[in-house]
Amino acid sequence: MQNFTKYLKTKANIAEPEFELLIKKVEFRNVEKGEVLLRPGEVCRHSFFVENGLLRSYTVDDAGKEHIIQFGSENWIVSDRSSAFFNEPSDLFIDAVEDTRVVLISSDFINEASEISSSFRNYNQIALQNHIRHQQKRINLLLSASAELRYMNFIKLYPDLTLRVPQWMIASYLGITPESLSRVRKELAHKNFKPN
Amino acid sequence: MQNFTKYLKTKANIAEPEFELLIKKVEFRNVEKGEVLLRPGEVCRHSFFVENGLLRSYTVDDAGKEHIIQFGSENWIVSDRSSAFFNEPSDLFIDAVEDTRVVLISSDFINEASEISSSFRNYNQIALQNHIRHQQKRINLLLSASAELRYMNFIKLYPDLTLRVPQWMIASYLGITPESLSRVRKELAHKNFKPN
DNA sequence: CCTGTGCATTGATGTATGATAAGTAATATA
DNA sequence: TATATTACTTATCATACATCAATGCACAGG
Image (cartoon, rainbow over the protein chains, first blue to last red):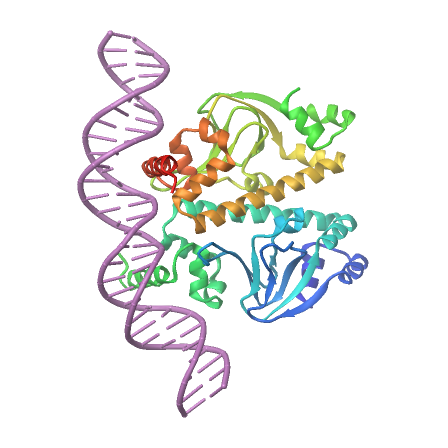
């Protein structure tokens, strides 16, 4: 069974007849590594459910540097929620870190699903709250923790991503340079061989 | 008319009969400057609507340093959403920066209001989405901008808070020390007297 | 009126991380 | 297989910001 099907049936608890109705409203698509799904200035018309593979969203500053806002692997939704919800132009890029199969979810889909199913509405609510919780933790880390601590936290939270994602992207997510991350890793390696 | 009344009637678009029903479910309370409304480890049972005055939420790290997550002045809601929604112990302090009059909003209130009124449900949804947008902008700034830029952004976004809040709290919100903020301000003053 | 307490400023010094540059390793492309 | 690109590391130097300590205010309470 596809991940998206599982998502609707199990997580969002949508029953068979509604499921048949809803599944027609979404579109599946294969995205090649490096392909861009959203650019700054565009309105984010779709949220992307990751069937398999890996997406990321990021900004590019005046100096041309990328700053990664979010990674999304299997079963995650990547989107610019503000842009999609408020119909505003986005500040973000979204592209594929690996070859990825995605499900395109329109705002209409979400609205319809919410009307059809109270458990979908409920699940969507939980997803929003989770997003907020997650962002708040990240803000707190950025305010309070050193590069090393932030990296250790990343490893613990996303052991899978630590392996799949190139280091310079992790650095970008952490708000440091690839060189700094390299140093941090060296430090950590030393510490692990000579504990204390 | 009270701010909270305006909030329900105008913003959330609640009609008179429902309003009468709902207003009974909330509690008003005066909070003295410095009084603590939530501590880490407690579950956040109430969201605090600020009638007038000023609240803040913050964490305290192992070294005893405070890191301000949010300010909330008139018409804002301060809460630990994760804790309140998921019934989990909070990581945050919430206390009053000024003498403050708050409205205590329980999770039950929100659930009931959502059932009674679709426009309240809708407004609540907008509030969540706004929260996410706001946090995302902050994450992006923390990833990409210098202390100076972050401070300029703060001034532009919260000119009122810039005046009401002691500098060391602004520094804490920005993720720098009070000393650094003092220097940033000095720099900016120079630049303004000698443009270019 | 003095005096304590909290906040802002300033200076001296330290340190984590950035910038730049170069080298090596890994991967893709021809 | 050869060659070009991209990723990671290492070294040096530069800098933004932190830390520590001292001083100056303002304002509150005796």
